[in-house]
Image (cartoon, one colour):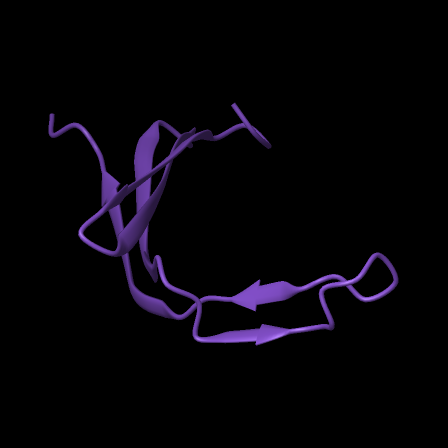
Length: 70
């Protein structure tokens, strides 16, 4: 649990899926981020003073809010 959210991540077929679940005002909030598993850019020199930094494309975002019907 991070910042009051259940969080997870997995990679399948060159996409990393990051998911978050949390309760807020009795409703279940769910988020999914689809991120490319291959970097779109690498910066830095790859040294101790200037390490390599990979940047990844966020392809899609989805959010749902679920509540119980009465």
